[in-house]
Length: 603
Image (cartoon, rainbow, N blue to C red; front, side):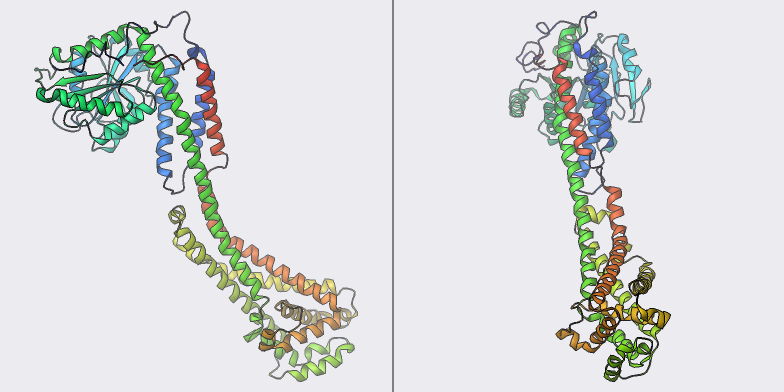
């Protein structure tokens, strides 16, 4: 056998003779009785559990994994370990496929307790081996509470097989974890969960695979969390021992792990039980035996790993808070794309009411016919009779009832509303499709206006027209013409107000209006001024126009709401990031008061 020095005495190994003494049963460590740290951790767990990352952003999947990992570590390790600092030290044996983890565990406890063989993956469910004296602690389920305890081998990765090994001293337990690079997703996930619950990692690799990327990624993660690590380099050809050991040592030093104990095991045979020769495992077995016998050394390992895990919470939670803020920013961006599309639609309607386009075609023809009959003027006061002659002479055509004009106005407005709603829906759809979070929320129907939009648009215009008539009645309530002309004058005047709403220049014809029939606008102006006066005309048109635009805004807001409801359902709470940061700050403050920090390194 070749070893890289004596792990019990080499620099960086836990000095079992010089570490702090065992915890005094009469005077437990301050943390054991300090409820502020467990309380802060419980609050942090609640904040993490409330955090949601539903929008499909590049950071979302990583944030969800990180949140799940932090929750698991809190439940599996931090909270139960804080509750029992004197509980047995848990050594999680992890490594790559075929590294010999199960064979090593069996050899250290001198019994075939974990299945080993050529089929991969061999370890499908974790196996925890402890002294009979420690069985009750691990059977209680406080540590790794999500795993079901069993006494028999199982194919279910969510079970934890407990095995009592009389050869293993009290105070120390080995957990044989699934392969970190298993072809089975559940096994890989479980391996990561178990490693996060370790007081000490015993990381097993081989001469052929020690440079693989996956183990080093996990080792860097462990170093960042302050976990105590020991390395096993297995199946080393004797002729290559020095070269491979030196290279691995260099790699460990480059990753800040130069102080980790390194055990080097040569290529060798196994006996009939599948155990390695004792001479091969003796230095490692002795190192663990001394660790098990020294409560102070075990406490130093636990404190270092525990404090490292607690210290790592703050930056990890800060990452979650950043991801939560990114979710809010994305939700705001999606909402703004929708609102911008429907604001543009509303502006188009405003322009349509002011640029003369609504005075063309059917509306213009029906208005000309309506005023051309003379029927409009017969019910008005005699003082506008002279205007009537001039206006009637200006128009010719087949007489048409007021209903036809009203229908033409309705049709023109409904066509405009349907057009702008369709354009806004398409613009919003395109905007969301170009955003990763929006694309994931899209539904095919959103590319078009709501199925009931035509009916709602028609109802909107009819309601507006009735509102205009009510406005005329109210404004003309003290006018003599109302009493003389009754309902017909109100209806006719209301139609004139509707026509006036479509002009932007207070009835002063522009070039465009001349092209579309300036006489129409002038006629409306003349009639309304004769009845109400100049200022009243302006007030009527302004109020009717404002009423129409407000109704249009409500219609378009409803259309935008189809999008906004989806983003609202996916939007995380605005307090998420602050709650995470506050909870993490409480944990960090409690950690610094707990006495875990500043106790020196265990390795």
